[in-house]
Length: 383
Ligand code: PLP
Image (tube, rainbow, N blue to C red; front, side, top):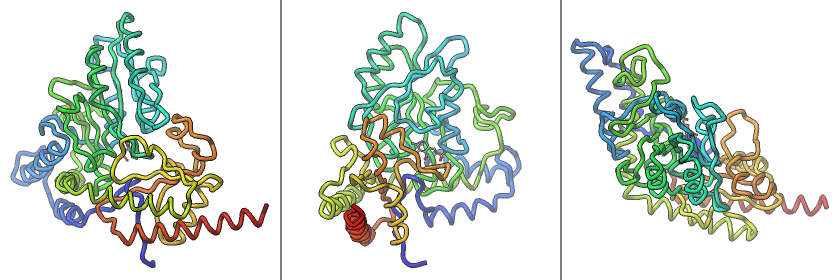
């Protein structure tokens, strides 16, 4: 294959070479981490080292980290009534990942959606009002607000939400899958009671993630039938996956010092796009955004056309939400922001990461410019 530029880190990041090596080594562990013999203890030590590395990325204690099969499982696990002797109401923002929008184990009647502003930021005034209204009803609020959105990169006001939620006697969960390694995360300063992370968005293996529970917070296990993970998630641990997650977390934490360089590449890309398409819309441009994400639409140009054209030019990007079904549907995120169908249907997500170089940005701007020119010319000829 000719040289390619992979600019779809929010869908998944490439596996880091250091992770590949650590996973290959860990595949050699003969023992089960629950076994008491030397082989078992070696596997346990590898899992516990990774637990420390992941805890450190989240600003949490190692014992608060529960390894899962990924971000989806962590989200679905946490969306259950935290205390069986109390009744709860689940609140989530309209731009959450589908695994949160599913409501987990809550009945649809006990879930409430919180809208976002036109910038794609959760409307905390509505959250505060809604929680106030529910107070007399006696249901305790469990609120799920992502740390940053996967499509627009808009950073959400998690700290401010925590104050509102705690004032109302509730608990706050944050899906920080996209924020990890891109902005600093610290559960204590963010005020979150529960946090979700996924390994493959930070250069770790696919199929492993974590749910982090603050000291004292309990969740009914989703997968029962064994004492692993402090009886909070049954099943023999995915030792190679967990080890890879740990290495990726340690590297991602180190790279936080360099995210300014990533933001500079993102800005260079957006400037280049504006230079070749003055009418291009950068979604959530006025909100605080992740340094690696750019969601761009050109009026009159369909996202699928751009994604296919860019792919042929050697560039991997996504149309709106990564379409797990293979079909491109209008993104619920862009719809919730009230964007016109023309803009929402044209939005392409470009997401950068640790492997992105200046040349990738140049290639993107040049291919994008060519494509837009050709599409506009074709449209004119057809008119
Ligand atoms: N949450 C967000 C914000 C995501 O972007 C994703 C992945 O696309 C997930 C959760 C799901 O994580 P996983 O792929 O590990 O199940």
